[in-house]
Image (cartoon, rainbow, N blue to C red; front, side, top):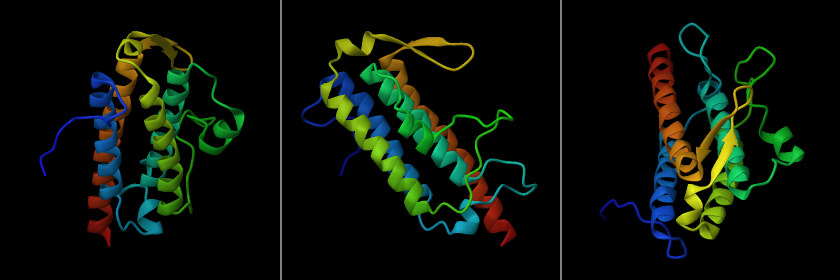
Length: 173
């Protein structure tokens, strides 16, 4: 099977291309984290000062969820903020995630991914030009096109961190 960047049949061309990058990276994340035991999922690196894979997975789901709601042009519902958030804790760090199984983290993330997929079926290529606001204190603006690219890029970026954590963990065990 040849790799390609095509969306689903019910997506417009450019939307589909962008969607497929997110889909590929989400599938790759599941592969990268395959068979992680709880101890490894909660591992914070050689000095214990890094974000764990569990924290990174929850962070990715939360960031993506926020983009889904930006695309929908709706505020993030409080119930979802409570389940997936916050973005940062009181020390401006990723919130602690400990003892949450890989299955639960990926299942929660899968729900976000499915919301994203569904939104992409409604987007037109022209919708990608719409500008939305994101960020907390220094609100920034970006097009929906950039936001979808960011979902994909951000996922891949943190996969590198998870891969590094896995190498360190295996080296210590």
